[in-house]
Length: 185
Image: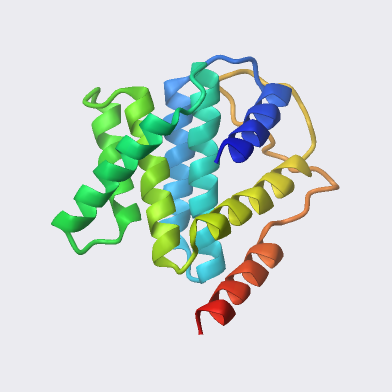
């Protein structure tokens, strides 16, 4: 996961000063969660999950706190406990996490790590193992790296216009999902 964090940090550093903005973070996480809720195709759900992780890792970079293995393990433990207590898809808990954070009940890092853990858990529920999850994240990193570079204010969404060289991640994510399904059977 650290390779993915390095890519996300570099992407963000080219577009933002390292300043954390809670409102932009909540807006972007809510947008990606909404995309997952609205997705009709498995590839679109995977893309939204990867984007959720990407945004959360970017917010961790802006906070100035590189992810630590202990934080991820704790978040996965929380995710596991939520799953044992309910039959809901793991990602559906993101809405509750975002509301708790917005109300000040959770710290920034706990919220971000929990969202990452829930998204990864949901990807595993789709049949992806950890290596497949990293591969999916790197596909999204490649797609984001193909967007134009323009420095923006820390409270403004970067790359609203993706640029002429943007390569959508969906074809490669679809290919990955096909490979996962083939190796599963």
